[in-house]
Amino acid sequence: MGYQFVHLLVHILIRLVARVRVEGWDRVPKSGSFIVVANHIGRLDAMLVYYFLDRKDIIMIVAEKYRKSAFWRFFVKQVDGIFIDRYQADYSAMRQVLKRLQQGGVLGMTPEGTRSKDGKMHQGRSGTAYLGAKTGVLMVPVGNDGSDDSELVRRLKRLRKLDVTLRVGEPFRLPPLVARQREAQLNEYTEDIMCRIAALLPEWRRGYYADHPGVQIYLQRSVDQPAD
Image (tube, rainbow, N blue to C red; front, side, top):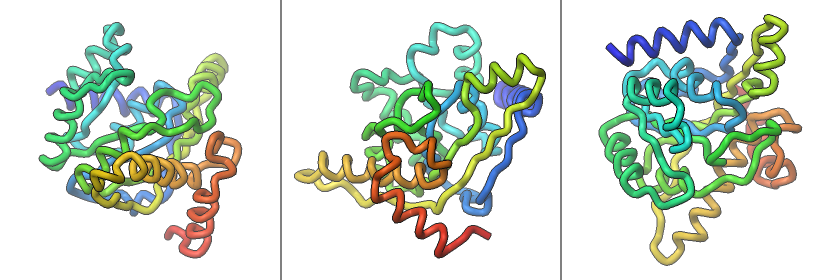
């Protein structure tokens, strides 16, 4: 009952404040476990996951600081979300996430770990890469363009809707980690994830990864194999 209420509430709120366009929807797996990886530019992003994916087994990870907010406590409880401490090794939260992924759930993650206040990509953290390599599930990169907090406020003051575009890239898997190469692999995998996301964004949003050669590789692939 809680999920149905939140699902309805999210759709109503998103439609009231934004026009959402999804490019590459055919690339999203229709079933099974996978991890959506995206850039994080606004507080609306958490709701966009539920608007974007019509599934009841979404695994929502929320920063511990939002536990102070009555709204977010309610939201997280209704969707059976997981609060996580981003600044310490939160093994309890990670075990919950791994268990639910293995049970077939869908996880939404922002590798940067925190919201970008300037709308540009910041350096990614290795937690997302660890989960992808540990579970071996498909990872689906998504470029989120338009849900910035500052733009949301500006548009609401003018009674105008946000224009949000979600671009879906090719799903991929990360190879298992090798004990002696773990740190190097996690760094490599994190860079790869971030470059895949950056290639789905306008040039000015790529930020830290704007000049990364990996971005150019994925941009060229998109030209060679355009989406249907």
